[in-house]
Image (cartoon, rainbow, N blue to C red):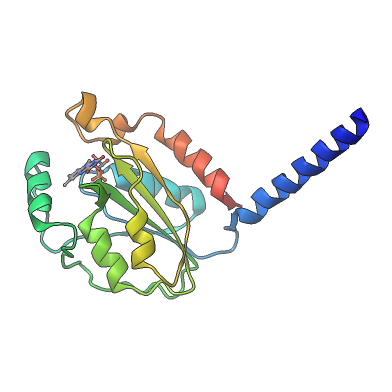
Length: 195
Ligand SMILES: Cc1cc2nc3c(=O)[nH]c(=O)nc-3n(C[C@H](O)[C@H](O)[C@H](O)COP(=O)(O)O)c2cc1C
């Protein structure tokens, strides 16, 4: 009886392991782009790290009209513009046809994705591509639900968000305030991708 229980447990373990493997995306030999918007450098640090780990190309999303460099002024301007506002980007269009997998990164702005990322997602077609969102945030956690809405024809993975201690106990918006973020990125990548 004991042997039977052990056998069932081993079989169950094997099945769940193989399912996990199947759920991962295969990154080898794929063309990968990491596109991100970053106001203060945190999301840039994460995006550049992902690109370096995976040998991916990088595209930094930039608004034609820059946002204020002072944190509180920027929060106020973005709050006034509202969630639906889509700033003009430079360049407007990027040729993404050759990419199979596109990571899209953004800071959390007012509990959502940033407006420049919203413009970027709206202006490009992600049909048939795998889109993998990531975020850095100051308290709100993961607020990436709008990526799925803006890429209806893509396979949008769940994504992840890294906490930045800015608002709580520092007054500097730097990657130093994101704890062990490289370890977090490594763990996340290992969970979602095989190389
Ligand atoms: C305009 C603006 C709005 C923000 N709104 C939020 C928010 O609603 N929730 C949150 O957790 N963090 C918020 N933050 C903090 C940023 O998400 C956080 O500092 C992030 O790491 C900044 O990334 P970046 O350096 O790439 O711009 C906001 C920051 C700015 C500038």
